[in-house]
Length: 209
Image 1 (tube, rainbow, N blue to C red):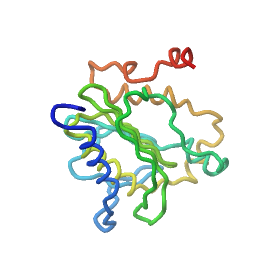
Image 2: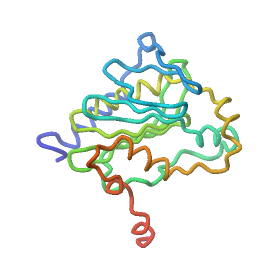
Image 3: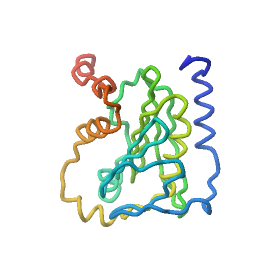
Image 4: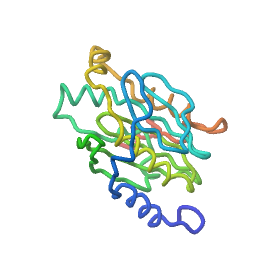
């Protein structure tokens, strides 16, 4: 059981339904604009802070971060043989949902993606990855499905100016994902949260191999 009377099967069905629902592109109008990305912010979602690459949002008592996937964009342009992979920051034993598929955005372009949800007691961490975007979420059980729906809508609506991103960042030889990941979760986690509790212990992982 995940929590109370809600089973893992129930959560899986709810999330599958969200990803299987057909999009009405006419209802998704981009209403947020920045240097590298334009996107639709769904009603009921608050933007707390942001810069040209990342923005943090709130939904009820939950929050999530949208981050432009600089490395993914550069790899797609120059190293197209590389595929998306799980960066291994989360404890795989906590995984309760995984979906690897593709979606059509509002411009009818296809985007492969992966989406994973990890359960930590009564809180859930989510990780959405496409070539262009990364989303990191922190939600309660009651919010995780609605937050997932908002993440998917925003991903489908997003128009990333890839050429501008490449021009600005392709000379950087390394993107420190682990540091970025920790910083993002330090931002969205509550004040009494410990980000280390939610990450894979690299020393333990290495010792077990």
